[in-house]
Image (cartoon, rainbow, N blue to C red; front, side, top):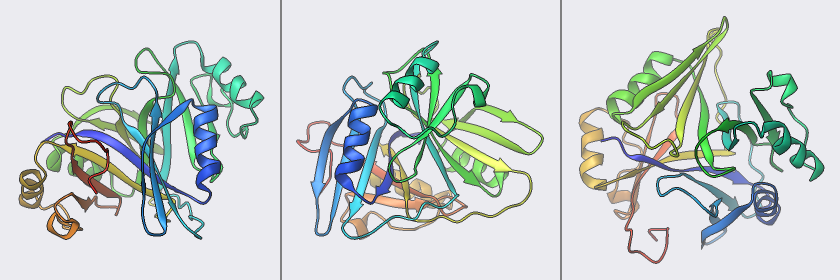
Length: 262
């Protein structure tokens, strides 16, 4: 089992403000929405998305202001090679918050923040649509446990790492993933710190071929039984990694009229 990363979910305080921010500054379009009782979920992404590209899921709960903990790191979006400075300057001209400019990041990447304070990294890639999701970063307290979770339970491959004197970054993704697919960045700080989850960060979602069969396989591999398919009306399920990050499991019907299984 090495399902594709389907989307990453964040919670926002003001739905229309967040939609305007991502649609104006990252040229995202609304892919689908679900209006529930007291909440709204919207899928967003570039107009020209790769078939295995990941979407951004924005969830708004009426009357709630999400708390962004430090266990959640950031999403990263792509711009073409050589266009980092121009892309960042464009965002500054549009009034986006100046958080970490390219110069302060050695000219390799940059960071901005959305209206809720979610960090958005800008990286240069020679693949994928402009502003498409490149990776999602989460912080972990035990690098061995986190890597073991993704490689043993999901069958992902470690495809890259960067180690400094104080921390390390590990990248994992499905075997034979297309370059346009999103990966997961695991950040491990050597000082033994712990993290607060908060509720501004929601979950990662892995798209599977057979929800029940893959769930059973995860249970055999001793993944956390958080919300099994039956408790979710056999539409989706959730497990958790060793740090408590939620991971949704979803089987999509390519012929369905909606992206939502409701």
